[in-house]
Length: 229
Image (cartoon, rainbow, N blue to C red; front, top):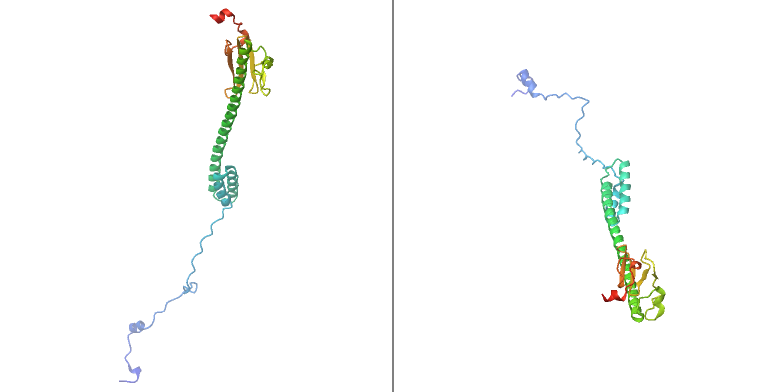
C-alpha cells in the first residue's frame, strides 16, 4: 500500500462534486422558524351590554309586579341602545310587563264592578227590609183603625204601628237608596216605594186595593159596592 495519497488516481469531476455537501443560498430577510412554542391566541373579549342587568330584572319583575318590571325594561332598552348593544331583554320585559299590567287592570276593574254590585245589593236588601217594615206597620194600623194611615205621622198613633226613628220615610219618590216612600191612595189602599240600587229603578209595593206602578192619587176611593163586586 502506498503511504502517499498523492499517488492515488485522480477522480473524475462529476464524482468530486457528488462528494461535496450542497450549499443552500439563504435570504437574509427571511428568518428561520423559532423553536419556541407559539402561545395560544387569546379569545376576543365580548362587548359588555350595560342594559343586561336591568333587562333581567325587568323580566323577573314582570311576573312579580308588572309596573316595576316595565320601568326596569325601559331603562334596559335605553342603556342598550346608547351602547349599540342588543335590546332583546328590554323588549321582552316591556312586552311581558305590558301584558301583565293589562291583565291586572282587567282584574281590578272586574273586582270594582263586583264590589259595587255587592254594595248595591246590600243597600237594596236594606231598603227591601225597610219597605217590608212600613208595609207591616201599615197593615197593623189598618187592622186597628180600619184604614191605612193617611199620613206618615199617623203611624205614631199606636205603639204597635210606630216607625223606627232611624228610618227615613217620605211622601215623595226616592231618588236614591236613602229613603222609603209611603203614600195612602185611599182608606183601603196605600203604596210603599223604595229604590233598587242594583236595577236603578223604583219598586212599588201595593197595599190593599192600591195598584203597583201607578200614582195612587189617580185611583178613586173604593166604595162598599166596589168591594162587594
